[in-house]
Image 1 (spheres, rainbow, N blue to C red):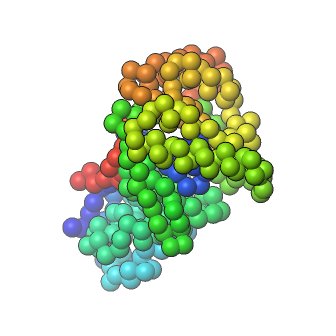
Image 2 (cartoon, rainbow, N blue to C red):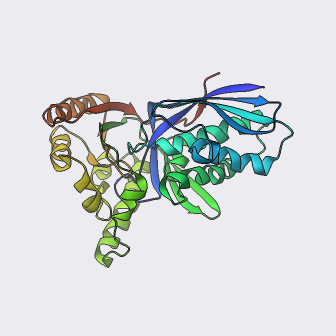
Length: 307
């Protein structure tokens, strides 16, 4: 194989109560990349379409993760990357993670799959750190594995895959404002009350149990973030109103996707998800801010080969 085209999906991280450790994969929203072998050694980005991202390998998230893998593999040939970016940077649905994991996934295929999935995550975290100034895998892991994932550890990488209830859908609201991950992290307190920590642990444990047991009611009861949401929600226009509207329309629960500004709602069944989307659009239309919305089944495949 000399060339491969891949689809690298968008993701939701934190999932309310799982700050920096929990995430899930979205369906139909993502970036496309073409990765090919070249006679000239090294990694080059020859196309970067969408959102004016740099061709410089050192300044591009996909390039940084690709270089990390290339240095480790040390092949006698090079790679060219074509990046077709559809996930807006700073949108809160894993734009940087899609870039980071997409390049190394494709390169690994062309090398004959010498690296494990955990090793691919290690390479991708190098690229993720360019965007957030921190190596974390809560978007990268679901983008690679699909479904829900829990980051047990990053040093060494240890990812747990969590079952996805069949009728679970996500509604994504993306106000067209940019919130950089590094800035969103800077507003969070370095210490939290023990009471809040205990609440967050209980919610995370309950959510993982609910996903294993298909308990939709418990999923809704567990989607409560007392660590990041109180601080990050202030930067998202009409956040409280959008959250209340989703609940009234039948959503199990609503919270911030990653560092924002996107908001996710989990719903039992497509009909409820479509209704939540419809009612939230009414609020969004009154805000005077451009927006996009998506209704997505949980993607259980992750990054995939297009051809």
